Image (tube, rainbow, N blue to C red; front, side, top):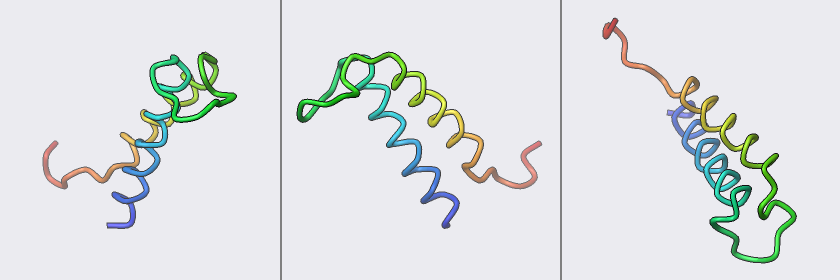
Length: 60
């Protein structure tokens, strides 16, 4: 349960980083707005959260 919570929070934060880095979303003036480095960091966070998400046992 804790692993799912961490993965979901980390992935959601990564998605926000991607959207701000690409200039799609910004609630307030932000240093992250339209900065591609943050989009790359966000993509990495989403990928990491995918691998942290617990997998079902016996599906291989």
